[in-house]
Length: 78
Image (cartoon, rainbow, N blue to C red; front, side, top):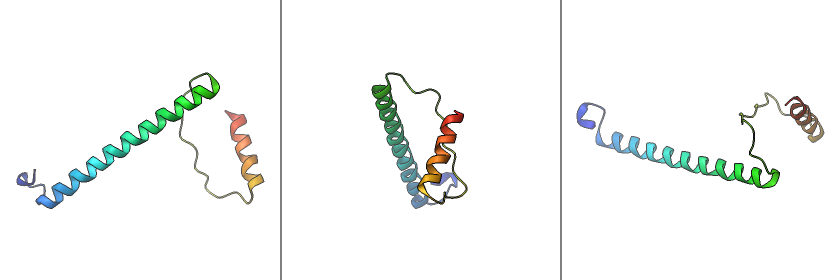
Protein backbone atom coordinates (compact mmCIF):
# COMPACT_ATOMS: atom_id res chain seq x y z
CA UNK A 1 0.00 0.00 0.00
CA UNK A 2 2.81 2.40 0.87
CA UNK A 3 4.37 1.60 -2.51
CA UNK A 4 1.28 3.06 -4.20
CA UNK A 5 2.05 6.45 -2.68
CA UNK A 6 -0.20 6.19 0.37
CA UNK A 7 2.58 7.12 2.79
CA UNK A 8 5.36 5.39 4.62
CA UNK A 9 5.24 1.96 6.24
CA UNK A 10 4.66 3.38 9.72
CA UNK A 11 1.61 5.32 8.51
CA UNK A 12 0.14 2.23 6.89
CA UNK A 13 0.81 0.12 9.98
CA UNK A 14 -0.80 2.74 12.21
CA UNK A 15 -3.84 3.00 9.93
CA UNK A 16 -4.25 -0.78 9.96
CA UNK A 17 -3.99 -0.87 13.74
CA UNK A 18 -6.61 1.86 14.06
CA UNK A 19 -8.92 0.01 11.68
CA UNK A 20 -8.50 -3.22 13.65
CA UNK A 21 -9.26 -1.42 16.90
CA UNK A 22 -12.36 0.22 15.40
CA UNK A 23 -13.60 -3.15 14.15
CA UNK A 24 -12.98 -4.68 17.57
CA UNK A 25 -14.87 -1.86 19.31
CA UNK A 26 -17.77 -2.25 16.88
CA UNK A 27 -17.95 -5.98 17.64
CA UNK A 28 -18.00 -5.25 21.39
CA UNK A 29 -20.73 -2.61 21.04
CA UNK A 30 -22.89 -4.92 18.91
CA UNK A 31 -22.49 -7.68 21.50
CA UNK A 32 -23.47 -5.24 24.28
CA UNK A 33 -26.56 -4.24 22.29
CA UNK A 34 -27.53 -7.88 21.79
CA UNK A 35 -27.17 -8.52 25.53
CA UNK A 36 -29.30 -5.47 26.34
CA UNK A 37 -32.02 -6.55 23.91
CA UNK A 38 -32.07 -10.04 25.40
CA UNK A 39 -32.22 -8.64 28.94
CA UNK A 40 -35.15 -6.43 27.91
CA UNK A 41 -36.92 -9.41 26.35
CA UNK A 42 -36.26 -11.53 29.43
CA UNK A 43 -37.74 -8.85 31.72
CA UNK A 44 -40.71 -7.79 29.58
CA UNK A 45 -41.45 -10.90 27.56
CA UNK A 46 -41.26 -8.94 24.29
CA UNK A 47 -38.52 -7.61 22.08
CA UNK A 48 -38.06 -3.82 22.15
CA UNK A 49 -39.78 -1.81 19.42
CA UNK A 50 -37.76 0.27 17.00
CA UNK A 51 -34.85 1.80 18.87
CA UNK A 52 -33.69 5.36 18.40
CA UNK A 53 -30.86 7.49 19.68
CA UNK A 54 -31.48 9.38 22.89
CA UNK A 55 -31.76 13.12 22.65
CA UNK A 56 -28.78 14.95 24.10
CA UNK A 57 -29.90 17.81 26.37
CA UNK A 58 -28.46 21.20 25.54
CA UNK A 59 -28.23 22.12 29.22
CA UNK A 60 -28.14 20.28 32.51
CA UNK A 61 -31.26 20.32 34.71
CA UNK A 62 -31.00 22.39 37.87
CA UNK A 63 -31.96 19.47 40.12
CA UNK A 64 -32.74 15.77 40.16
CA UNK A 65 -36.45 16.57 40.40
CA UNK A 66 -36.28 18.68 37.22
CA UNK A 67 -34.41 15.92 35.44
CA UNK A 68 -37.04 13.35 36.47
CA UNK A 69 -39.88 15.65 35.39
CA UNK A 70 -38.23 16.14 32.01
CA UNK A 71 -37.80 12.40 31.61
CA UNK A 72 -41.44 11.71 32.50
CA UNK A 73 -42.58 14.17 29.82
CA UNK A 74 -40.39 12.47 27.24
CA UNK A 75 -41.69 9.02 28.19
CA UNK A 76 -45.33 10.17 28.03
CA UNK A 77 -44.80 11.60 24.54
CA UNK A 78 -43.59 8.23 23.17
